[in-house]
Amino acid sequence: MCTYSFVHYKLHYACVSCRISFKRHPRDGGHTCPRCTTPMLCAGHDFAAPRRSNRKAWSVVAAVLNAGLRYEGFEPCGCAREPKFRPRTRAQLRARRIAAARTGTPLAVLLGRADPLETR
Image (tube, rainbow, N blue to C red; front, side):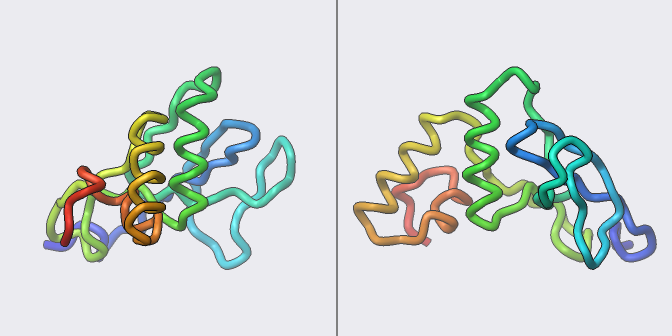
């Protein structure tokens, strides 16, 4: 049975500048931050927000979300669970940026790989 077929789960939306996140149902116009009124970024179903005081972790979250990636663990239909890798530390983010500059691979592709030098 498909997990996401029958129930519409809420998605996580994050405001990186305010370092907050909320779970909301998706809508066409998107969601705005209640603190600064800027558009919030959709972070996906499996986003685990870092503590508000952890600026370094939020900078990594900002890089991942600005690259167009989301934190998802389920396949789109929900049948299979294949955890997607996302960097959690600045060192992991830095390694992927260096590998992207050296190889010419888009950063969004390397942010989804556990090993930045692995070829698929």
